[in-house]
Each structure stands twice: as structure tokens, then as C-alpha cells.
Amino acid sequence: MDRLKNSAANALRGVSSHPKYLVGLSLCRILLGLSTTLYYVSNIPYREFLWGPDSYSGYAAFKTLTEDNHIFSLYALSDSSTWFNLVYFVGLTVSLAWTVLGARSLTVLHAVFMTSVYHRNYTMWEGGDALTGIVLILLMGATVNAHFSPLAGRVRARLERRVDRPHLRTSLHNTVAVLIVFQACVVYTVSALWKVAAPQWQEGTALYYISHVWQYTYSSAFPELMDSLVLTAVVTYFTIAVQLLAVPAALTSRRWFREAVVLGIAGMHLGIMAGMGLMTFGFAMMAIDAVIVRDADYQALFLRVRLLRERLAARRGDRTAASEEPAAEELSAA
Image (cartoon, rainbow, N blue to C red; front, side, top):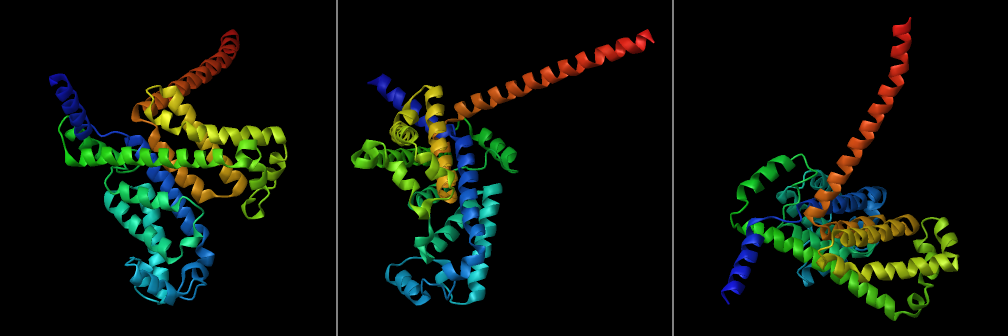
């Protein structure tokens, strides 16, 4: 019993005194920020038609919806075109600033602006919007700028001062990371199970039919590739397999397995982006995937990349030295 109590106490102490998933959450911020920034920028020419006071989604109906369902949206505060454009472009600025800086205050602001534009016209999302909303709310309690941010050095110094000392913020940060990984596992497992139950996915022909839906055909190469029965079957079953492996990847202690599965899922989303044009969806989903990979995995990866760069630099140096030797001999002979 004492051993069990000590194990539980050590586990709780570790959760509350050592922040984890710092690299993954920083990558999550960047990818999710790219998704939302792209969402804003790509729709600038059509913003009035999609979300403005005179858009096809009527403002009066939108106002009634927000009041009846107690939904908050900045766009519901006024039917002025000036107010609409102000909220839209401030939201774009906040999205870009959050992507670069990642401060906690910017996380809160970004969540407010993205929730507002979502409620103004929820039909405009490519998919993954519910998961994006959940993750943005969760990220309010996490440190998402310990890496890849101008503020990263200062943030890591502050975190280092709290190491080995239980802190509420550290506990909240680690809880958020675990919940995001849990959300990713639920999404992929449920998606895979739905696929397994569908006849087209069982037969390995689902992607053939998907590639020939013109609304989702971004590249003519996609339907041409899916005309191959063998390739269609391989990609279809590969999609199911990597989604089913998300839970084992999150739980395993084998780094190579986790990296391989996450890389496979990322490849799936890159294929969706290239073939179907679902850019914001792809970035949003890869943002969640980035948290599955642990800090130790990223550190090992960064070390391998650094060693590879050093080897390449050493080889270039050896080649340069070898090419200079004949020239030096010619000068000495002269």
C-alpha cells in the first residue's frame, strides 16, 4: 500500500512540476495559426458576401439565433459594415500575431475571434471546426510559445524556475496536453470505425468515389491516380490503418512507432490538402497530431538533424580542402 501511495504521489508531483509536450504544443500553435490565418486571408475578397451585414446568411436571422441560443459573437454587436470589417481584420491580425508570438492573452483573444466568425456562418468551414474550437479553448490553459517564438527564451527561463516545484499552471498545462492527445485519438478511432463499417472502404474503393466528387477535386492528378485499382486500394486501407494506430502510438514507449504513425497521418493529411484542396482542414488536423509526439521524440529528432548537418558540413569542408591542395602544390612548384 505504501508503495502504491508513493507511486501515486510521484506521478502527481511529476504532472505538477514538469511541463510536458512543450514542442508539440508550440507546433500545434503554429499549424493551427496557419490554418486560421489562411482561412481569413483566402476569404478577404468574399468576406462581405460570406459574413457581412448583407451576406447570403441574413443578419436578422443570425441576430435572432445568437439571442435565442445565448451565443456570443462579436459580429452580432452591430450591423454596420464598418464594424464588420473592423472585427474581421482585427481577427486576422490577432490570428497572425498568435501564430508568431503565442502569448496566453493572444490565445484567449484568438479563441474569441474565431468563435465569433464561426457562429456568424458555420457552413463555411471545411471540416474539423468542432475540434478546432475545442482545442482553442483548451490551449488557453497551456504554454504554447516555449519554442518557435520570439518569446521562447523568456518563457523557457520562467518554466525552468518552476521545475521540481509543484505549480497549478504546470498541472493545467499537462492536463491540456493530455486532453488534446485524447481528442486526437477519439477523432481518428471513431473515423476509422465508421470507415470499417462502410462497404466502399471495406472493398478498398472509397477514394475512387471521393476523387470523382467535383466539389472536392482540387487537382486533376488526384482522380487520375485513383483510377488505378491497386493504388486506390493501398491508399484506402492505409488511411484506415494509420487512424486505428493513433491510440497505440499515443500510448507506446517506442519512439520509432509513434513517429512512424504520426508521419503516416501527416502524409494522409498532406494528400488530402494536395488532392482535395482542404488546406485549413489539413493544417488544423496536423496541429493536433503534433501534440502526440513527445518532447523526448522531438529532441532526438533535432539531435539527428543537427548531426546530419554537421556531417554534411564536414564533407563539404573535406572536399574544399581536397580541391585546394592541388592549387597549393602548383604554386609551390612555380
